[in-house]
Image (cartoon, rainbow, N blue to C red; front, side, top):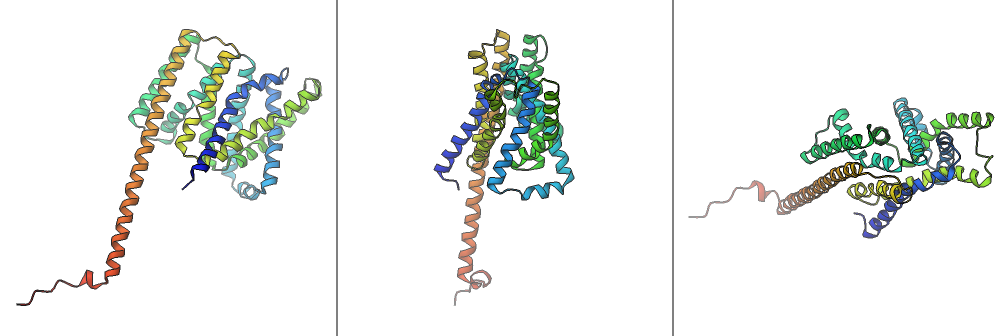
Length: 333
């Protein structure tokens, strides 16, 4: 049983992780005039450096040998690396090209996409509230498509890529730091090769914009790794239902930044689409909390029944075999 102090610490870690992910749109514009591809390549290279230092400090290398001997898991790691490359690259491009609100929508609808993928790919069965939430989410996409004049491709690509990433990571079953290490190790050589090629063509901004700019590009490794470490610390200290609620902090922060800081437009039809998404998420959250409460209540009843059975067995054992086997005597006449 986790103590209240541990849960509070975990809550702080969770708020820190999702808060940093929510505020990261403030960081990517600082890297201009670097393009999205160059920023992405630096993120891959420096992320590997950061997690390698973390693994050295923690002395957690045993998993590497096990992973190398499992080609199927390695292939899944490669798929995860490819999918997160799409997600990272598109997100950086979106922020630096005035699409922060649309990017935030991608992470709002990600839980709905994850549920839909569970039905289509894993043959999972949904509760009625989940079906309604998915239906509302689909209606929201239609409303937003009308508002944008086309489907919200940025949002959909971010949502589907991150949902796919989560599905693959679930099958790989590696810790957060270890998984990021493996993914960035696969991406390291292509990313480094791209940076060297860009530099040879005179298109690199790493050294051309001064030491401050170079330091910011190197900091992409910390920007990637630190929230992940905080998330890992939160995941082992707080219930999954709490983490599920905290995950909405990131897109909320991104949405607010998109409107207030980046001054992106929000016409009425876009507000209508977002309102539908939020309604779907509210329904989904209510259903998840209700199910979690029922599960906990069932677990309490099961433990009580087992305790009662064990107590009865102990009583019968203490009374001896005669109490069980010997028939009652007839009264003397």
